[in-house]
Image 1 (cartoon, rainbow, N blue to C red):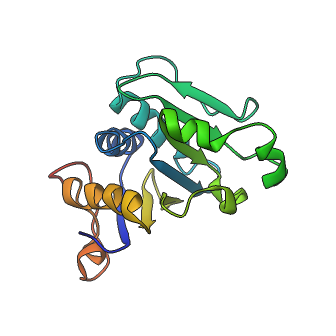
Image 2 (tube, one colour):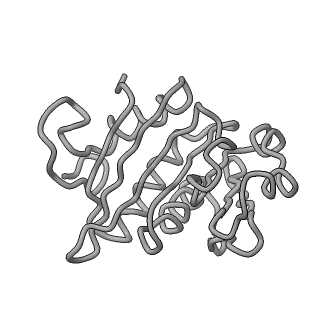
Image 3 (cartoon, rainbow, N blue to C red):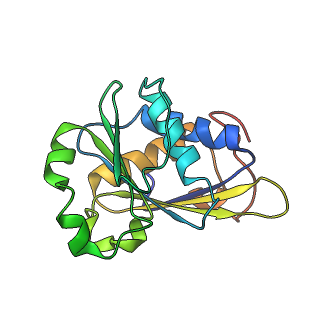
Length: 179
């Protein structure tokens, strides 16, 4: 099993969606995916891939003003966006994490705005712009069995930088089996 980290350069929005769909194959009820990164880094695009990978065919949009959307597929996907959040206490008044965790998987955009609210067992994905062009770097870290299971799924089935296997950084990943 991969021990704690994985990274890849994702060359396009389409590849980011494929990464999300690939990760969705491993999602189970109770899993959490925490997303961080600048505006435009691809967080909502990755969530669109997660929802599609779970079988949801409707519109996927960031719930910036509503805080949460639920996409119904193989398992429900609770999609939160904390961009406009005014701290963890405000979040506790609106959302019940135990209920979401018991009924589906949870993906949180801007998770760094409420890090104490995200379970320690989550998979954390940091998305970063890689100028010039549409490239994005996705760096994953995980602790605990749930997060590590998801991280292992990414590393085994997608590819990524050699850093995930103890080698030098570099390379791109365009999908399962691709590089």
